[in-house]
Length: 508
Image (cartoon, rainbow, N blue to C red; front, side):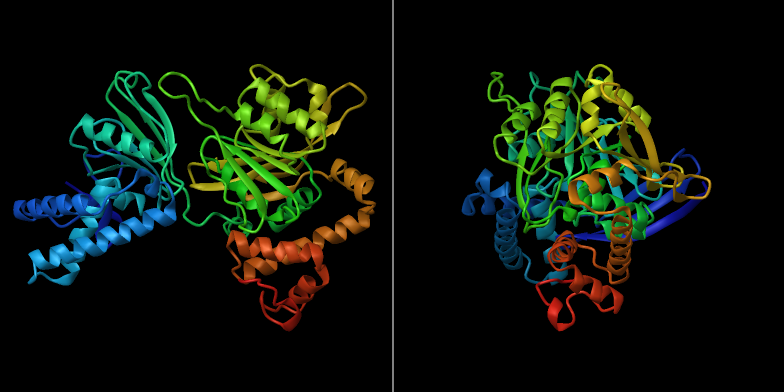
């Protein structure tokens, strides 16, 4: 059998080191993701069971302690320290590294997802999928796409246990009567579970992993997802409260893209985000209220829908509203009413082009009256090229009112050219410039100069590796209040946080 190793690396999670080999085997149609861990003898496994019983008896764990990352970490540290002491007393002659490895395994079983913890710690993976206990786990690798693994779940009951444990931590339930569940891990990774017989081959678990440190605009510019020119235009739009919808297909990066734009919101604005599962991460110093939906209890009571939260948010005096995804007519109606009453609104929607986004909005089931679309300024479309494994801004289009009561027309300003892998300008923006002139008094020349300044700042941030949500947000906020200081740093090619006048808590 011919075997070719495509990649080889090691992942360490809680002192448990797993060796990863991605191999192409002659009899397999897709490459195999092989996780290799040391084999434990029966006596060692029995010892771990004994240590687990002692820890459970002496360290009570409240469910609420596992909901927050900070308290969950302190619980983990307590169990780690106590468990290590017990293992040292039971196995005093064993190497300390092995002792740490054993307690790490125990923590994975007690507080985590057991054999899934190493793949969860692999930053190269985007998705971890259990289809049933009848077949191995599958993963989606950033470079190699879908891979079959050598990790096998022992029984359907084990899949149910994983789903129940995940749901319990975030107040979600999955039962025979409620066999579908959307939830999330404390790390922010999104989880979907289904139970047999709804999923006819067996119970399923799908974990979509999210980056531990959120993507930023500098990351997107560096990996060519967006150009500085496009980013500057969207920055200007965010600064002056233009309404925007981010469209794209599944896993095209819609939410991530919306997240990279949030540091451009001025710090004196009140922001409300509404999501089914918490995914957005805004700069810590912003005036931000995150809201999430809630499913009904087994009696069908207590549900809080996205529409409930959206209607309620209008009573909270928000300057900006960010909606996770537009799905239904009533949500869209309230959202566009919010735009027309002076709120700045951003949302995502499933669509592959700006034209398709428009058609989805004005046709069932969303069915927004065409005249209401005049309040929407921009549509940005994200695209994922599966063949090359890249994500790009596919289109940036503005909606231009066609005349009194006659709806809108589409003006595509930027578009991605696949054959050259470049994002190029397709047309001049005129509605955006017209709105800015009307509301700020800026001339076209001043707007052009402002965009040039923003391009320079973005290129300076990329060059100086400023790539955290907070650091970018702080620099943008100082630019709003004292533009001359930031532009002086940029023009003199100084590093952020250096040079007397600029030392205001800005960190690269």
